[in-house]
Length: 309
Image (cartoon, rainbow, N blue to C red; front, top):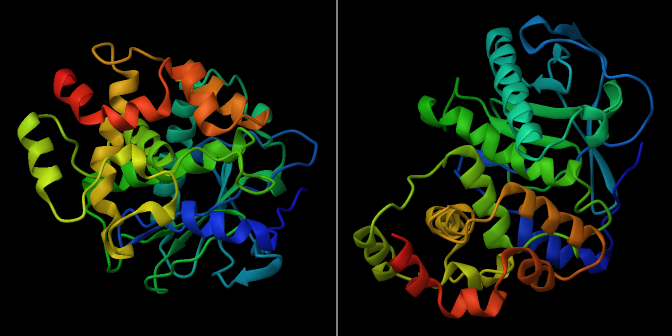
């Protein structure tokens, strides 16, 4: 099993790009437990198994931590579902949503098997912690994702909960594709990482579909070109307002992938990730896969989007 150790030099970038809350009730978890050989346990999401005595551990800044749980863990083909006190029914529901979302991501990115993502046995499965009682937890972990339980406040609207899981899973999926495993020099710009998660999930936040909505967004306090948000420290708003940027991030990515925009494909996104893994800067990977420079997109963003809408 590979464990990520965040160096002192990586701390700033880790904080910049990953300590992001898409709802006050949502937490992104930064890494995936990877490695180990063997076959994936072929358990369907609706035919999972209850297992126990598996710790929910994570490594943060080189320090290993453990979250307590109820020791009733639901295991499926690709996931282990933990909780502090959520119901069995909810664990199964989250597992089904997670498996469906992962299957859709694998299809979109032409991944034929979970083995290609490093999910090879129980130890390397993605861990999800349904957090019912620990309120407003805002840290970065090294083992999957933590989401708040809809069974207790602060709650997420039910109709958006599956989108929320898929949004967070898209961040996890980037790690499964090999990004961010040895620091974050290979991580996409903040606007792109959050934009692709919103786009691929269908939008946890309301999407922008008209020029009037664009004008209203621009007119709001502290709203700047989304493509200028390269890292978390580039936000001109307070931490509790960063979710205001998620709809415009989604629009920035939608323009790139829409036939009426740049008409790029998910395969181009996959190539961008490969370029990052191979050491290219995001700006270099972006121009080579999206066909225009990052500077050009930033400087002409609102003009391009107005033509697109």
